[in-house]
Length: 220
Image (cartoon, rainbow, N blue to C red; front, side):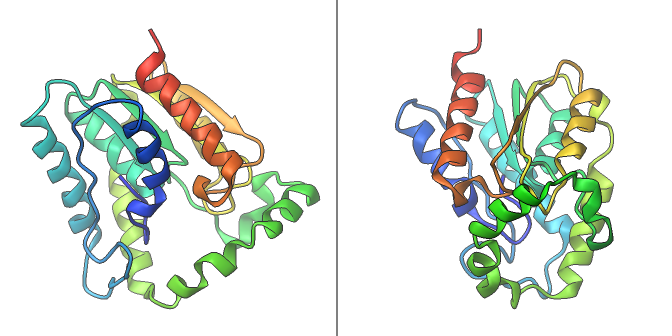
């Protein structure tokens, strides 16, 4: 389950890696208005969550064991579904249980070196073509749907792993520390040099691939 204003491309590298090594059934939803071309003017957060929910229920018809992978907003959706339905394993990648406010950048705990490394990744240059297609209303929808779906983490019984990068300027990694404390038995991996979207650097993507494979297919 991908993130807000994103699409399958955010998780495609991980999906391709895992699919090349293991056989499994899957659903890979794209929320209304998301994907390669953004059209967020009229869609709602409820519609985004419904798409994620429909993907789960469709997969449930075909298999008896489900692993959920959720990135950013998709991590919030995945965690909410895992509270209500039977999910065996839950992998949350930089889940958006919180988001960074401009006035609170200091709370990220980033050093000058962190900021320097982030600038080298040229994040804005990679996303500026999409930013113009994001209306303010869509951000309000994001905030509202996350607010309604992020509670109840204590009710998750799935085997859970949270992976978060310390170079994340969009979702503070400390929110994942707090989430891991609330989810019974959850594991937490913090990657020093990873930004919000792991696919932006080969090293971060490789670390994510290894962590995901170990958790989903090799543990136990």
